[in-house]
Image (cartoon, rainbow, N blue to C red):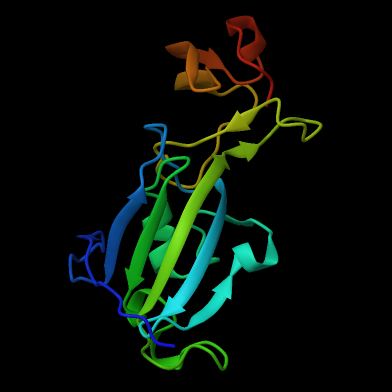
Length: 190
């Protein structure tokens, strides 16, 4: 049975061409949003314009996770989920150029299909760089550096450090130190 879909929302497409419309259904509970390379955890329901459901993580009762900004999902998701807060539920209306394009996907999504997703963002986290992969040190890169070179032991680096736990900042400072001697400046290993 077809359902009437209201095509409204804020245009969040990079070109402001109406390619991705976002409507907030339920506001999130934090001001923090995921950034590129964060692992995000969502539930979603995908429908066609006529209301036909083609996929749902809720039906599988399993949250979907992916790394934001890595191209592992459709463009609309990489763009749209980056605008969400924890706990937020939104509706994304995605034109085909931000979804599956002229090829479509499988039997359920035809060529040039506009898709609608209801997405709930549960959580996100940066890259686990702890030695035991126990999430004791999580890295999030807010501004990516330029070039390809990475500092090695003995290199002098300038950094901005921000330590948080449960959305509370416990350490925030700028400092200069020699790589390999971070413990002398109270910087966790990793």
